Image 1 (cartoon, rainbow, N blue to C red):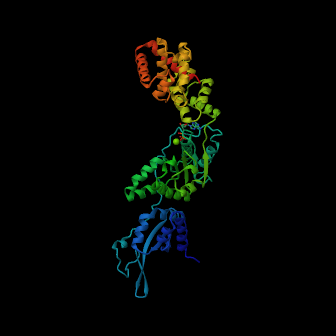
Image 2 (spheres, rainbow, N blue to C red):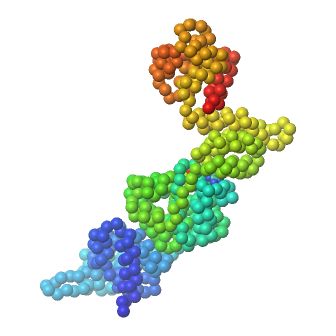
Length: 477
Ligand code: ADP
Ligand code: MG
């Protein structure tokens, strides 16, 4: 029967090998090491030279550490003995040098080796860590719908049983503003609520990356960095796509991932794209992301958008009519963050109702204006054609008038106003605008804009016209 220590070390080696990218490195550095003794949870291994010991300590300490912990438990300890095989003449003398050998038979080249400080993995100490969770991002405030049902219920299942469900890791992906951060924070909060003793940490990938870079500067700091993360029960990393192309960070995360996963700790990751599209991330990471559950958050449908607005409305104690809610939900379609942006601005602009003084009310005009300025103006295509039409309509002119050579004041002014709006509301060049509005050159357009701006600043009636025309351009669909 295999000796216990050999068996244990064999298991460790298997984990170590699994986690090394390079077989050659494994053969070089681990094959020559063998188990000597196991006392309690202290394993002694032999290494062929002090250099080996140093190299292992410098490069693989964390990997060895998590393998040992996985096999021997969290109190695992390790010590090395340098086992030198001296070839003298034809005879081979095994020489034990190490901590427990009082009188090494051979002088040892590196005196320090006798004071080798075996690395002893410190027992888990309970730490107080601020989980970095926003108390508002609860499941309660997270509206459930077809667009997020799978991710949401997986999240709830994880919160029941962190690390022990099949959803480990949980990988949530979806476009910007669709609720990834909210959902993973809700999971974190729920776990904290159910299991206050669990160490939960939410961190963005870019902050993790900064910490890693920081820790790189000093070797000890790096070990602290790894140790810190290896003690966490529920690690939530947001926007993992930020790791793309950052090999060092990915390696560190890989070690942490393996350690936590093997110790039955929960990992929750988010990304703005699916694992398949995560270019620049190591294959071994991508493979691991797929071990658990991958869930997509989709753009909310109309009903969901309405439900989210209503929830916000009740939470904030503001009254908005169904008509307005539907109007907003129909205009802001792709992004919940924008939906909230409109809501927050509306809230800030809402008026206290004259009839019920404590109630805030919102009018449809307010909603329209806010949506125009916040959301649609940047997205909706406003064409020069539309501007020309609106301006001509406003002044009761025919569209042809714009091209007329007549230097009538109202025609010239209509043209100038159309140029002004075309310049401010479209991305077309001055030359293009000039050509489209009366066949003028770019200098004429510039002059027109200047004239309109001057009049706007000095003439109140003119200013009213401009405001009204702008509204009409925005509202005409
Ligand atoms: P992401 O991380 O995907 O970019 P966030 O989680 O930051 O998106 O969500 C954007 C905003 O929308 C947040 O304020 C969030 O609270 C809100 N939100 C997202 N999804 C929902 C939902 N299902 N119910 C309620 N609010 C939501
Ligand atoms: Mg986010």
